[in-house]
Length: 357
Image: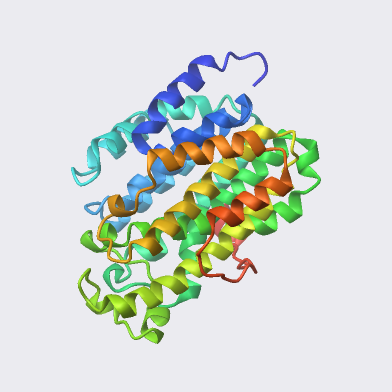
């Protein structure tokens, strides 16, 4: 970015992030300024793509056209203002006012994007393409009855979160040559990191998603536990449902173990990046523990991590951010009582030909 003053851009992103993500509004400002700007910008662009994907009124052709337009805008082949006007005009009231406002503000987000480094822009564009090409695979499936199996859940999580883990790895490596020396090891764990966070959200939000006609749970896993997802309801066979959820929690826990391995590969002197990762992992672990402690929950608010617990995570990681030994101990403490799961990350990628289109 040369000598460009980042202050106004950082101020804008810090102002808008809380409107669309409480968690990322908390964690992204911990990053070094150049990364804070790039990661914040990437999140906003991914959220614009996600907003288009999630609007229930948009038909398939228009949704694809808007995604294509967004990709073209990032390639500087399309006008951001025209995209914003078209997108805003077609989004329905089912999309929140704050998300519609973000889409309308695409020109501001894109203006910041064009002031990033070439490497940052390329990494972000690749991530947005992967999301836009991958999410529609699930948009018109029978969303109410769950996904077919764990492999489909892995693929879904990759398209909406794993690709973000890959993006962050590219940005971290571009930021630091020391981190860059660990590129392949970090990349191997990056999609698993994202999947752990996404699976935690799926578990936490299962009843809110159900109320909207969505279910991202794997049918085969719950069928093996004796639970039919076609009968999904808060008051239906909670004992069998909990068996399935415990298996899902174990898998999410395994992914979060990979996330911790990833975090400890970041050099101790990169305290901001470590805190960014640690806070996400810690809050996810505490959320999974809340779910296990409240098996009859019917709303995300029932398993929401308290402000006191959030403050404890922030304080503990600030004090111990440079000590791998203490951080491992804190992870074990935060994960106490969670069932163990596999830590072999799924090898998920997207066909390069689909990214280039």
